[in-house]
Length: 540
Image (cartoon, rainbow, N blue to C red; front, side, top):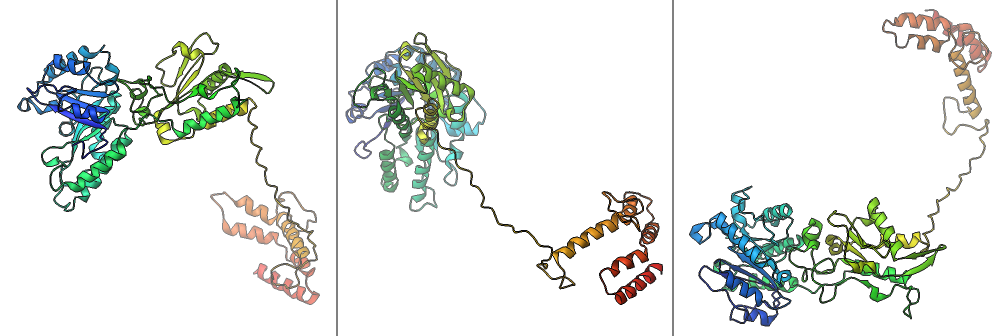
């Protein structure tokens, strides 16, 4: 099968009831060791702890062993499973047996449950272990009349991961072809969609169940087999890699803090002092990617941002000692670290992806700022370098981390602040003086009307509305007895007598006064006829 599925990243082996635990040089595990398969997931049903310990003792260095006892325990005695209390006790015995084993960092203890049982018994958590295990495994099969969506099938694994704070893995994945899926393309699409979603969740492994109707080696399953081969090539674990966004931070710091690029100087930040990926002996923590995290790794299990962001990328940056003069001051690793920690404590937006800073403020004591509040110090190596951990989802997404460090370099004067964007000055629009003799832009009832006519009309109308009949002076407010005063006096009264208002307004409109004002703008004979007509209408 390894010839068919070259590049296998994880192999799951089942040891049934009464079957012996295989050895590393035997026919079952030997080919996996020879092929360099990085992860082996072994499930045992018997409580043969002597054989289990012998297996762990002989594990090849560098290989990650996932160990499961009594997988799918909810099936009941008919499937050879233990009652719940005995099963839990067996797990407690196994955890205690291997707690201090020298290979514990490369040994993950993983109970594996039946997703379908948890769906039928929604909310039943009796089988959930309260022990220091390292991950939660699930056997996930498509059931129903069609291909169920990843969000549907992964709801329970995601909920339990959130509840326990542990990453999940898929021990068995399977789907039978649906009757309507005559060419198998539906199952192929489902396989890819499931793997994509499982990867996006930061799950540790995903293995297909090659048995019975799910066996992709069987005749007629060639299209699905090719799909799984393609997925294996795409998903094979890759050695821990430095992400581009942290490389960009590294390059930025070296550009401005390594003054003499051609020589090693005590005051310069040298390339060897700015590290991202841990060396070969480094296991666990943010300097390691998915291939080198260890059992109950704090950089994975303490935050959902790390569980879902677990990838091939390292997610940490170490910065060594330096000293530079800028802005009349000396700046070094201590002041740099203190500045960053202050920004983190203040909640600056460009620090949101930093999980922790391990540093020394004085070269004598080591402190740790931890966004999750888990720890307050670190080992003595941080007297000479400052460690920055970034939440793994930020490095996985490639989110830019340079703004914070660029802001520091700007604050101390090594980078010139950007010139302020000039505010555009609006071009003044020429507005020539308006002449009262100019004619109006639009015609009115009189083609010869000018701006001056309109201004005069407005002033006359204003004075007429707010002045008593016969008054010659304008007022700042309607005078008593003016038409507007009469109207305003009536406004807001519930007992308003409309006829009385009309009478008072008409009384204020003296025909002689109106006639005199009209006469100012009309020939005498026309003004007389208008005045007579107006007097007659007002008197009627």
